Image (cartoon, rainbow over all chains, first blue to last red; front, side, top):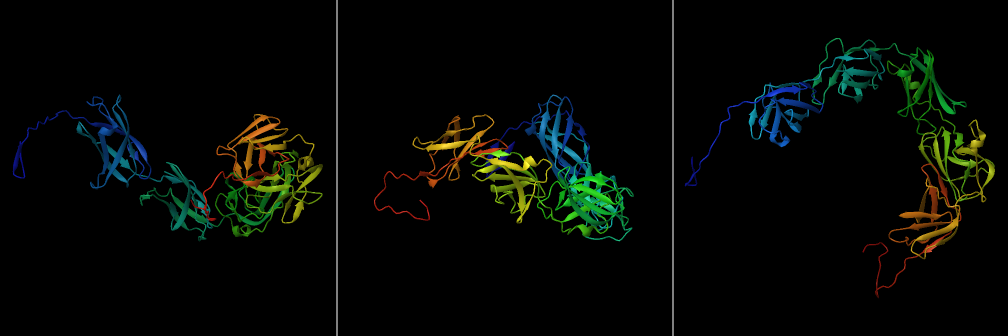
Length: 142
Length: 355
């Protein structure tokens, strides 16, 4: 390869090895999280992932399925090399489905079709009647 | 944050699956008004809820309250508050009385009355009261807000009946007083004079009195005094309201203090050598770094930077456990001036300090 910089010609030899194997994220647990709570999620990689897992080698983010510019980065807080698992901290996001992208410093982009459901639903309240003067204690479940 | 229609529901506690909130008390709603409970997330979103699971209706079919009375229960040695009215729930678990925002213990709820033990109030005048039933605030709830009740101090007992002539810490059970009570004293019933050099009320019903360094005769009966009125012992055992500080008591007594060695060495009698007690010394308010009980007749107090140059001041020697403090008797003024070995001629010093 020849590069010309300020009329100076520099010749470089670069070698690039294309890796033809594909490794994937297999599962994410839990697959549904709250928009407002900080929660740990565990991502399972294929068990024959070719590198020793190192926390600093991974970059993980969640991208909104409806707005690709809305990206939430997830810190990798722990790895389990024996079982090829990552534990990430999800810090909350607007409700919606998010696709998970995983990048490894040496391997590159790890294939992932993993989806994270970010949502909160109220299922019931414990009291449907209360004083007109207020002061009613209500327990909301969701 | 939650809301019901246009009214707020203030969050009290949350976890990952439940939110507990109390409906707004600032407005009176029209009976039979209905609204959905909506949870607003901090992401500015609403958490959806399938109808009709979250539908809430305001009702005027609630208990009515009329009066609140305070009575002292001389068997349990506690104050009881009784609220009367109609259509009470009968359920102690959902009936809550707050005095100045502090929850009291619910003892009994019938159709027409609810009885509570006073467990935590700030002072004898008791701040505004608020009573909640399972449905929330009752009808006429404002009738007990400014109740106008004032509790008399009830001296039940004192933890010690015998103290050091140099002063001791008494912890007394006095119902009806709290941390904001001011002017409370424990007094000698015969003379009416206070036996406390200082009084501290750390929590409801707990009075800490550091006694004066004077003799208090055997058989002296102690009264609780507040706002110029003395109240007799209210406990069932009157001996627990008696106290003495005698010169013949086996309490620490200092006969001499020596500072010539650079430490403060107390000589005397009855110094407490028991491991449960810790000796402490202060001189013009500065605590000694180490205080060693050498024997029942000698204690050595050491300040790392030397004995504070306090001029003329009376040191304090005490023997403390986590609950008891006995001050040594016989302390006299001690002189420890600043000793200037030499100074430059024409040296001037600012009275305002500096260097």
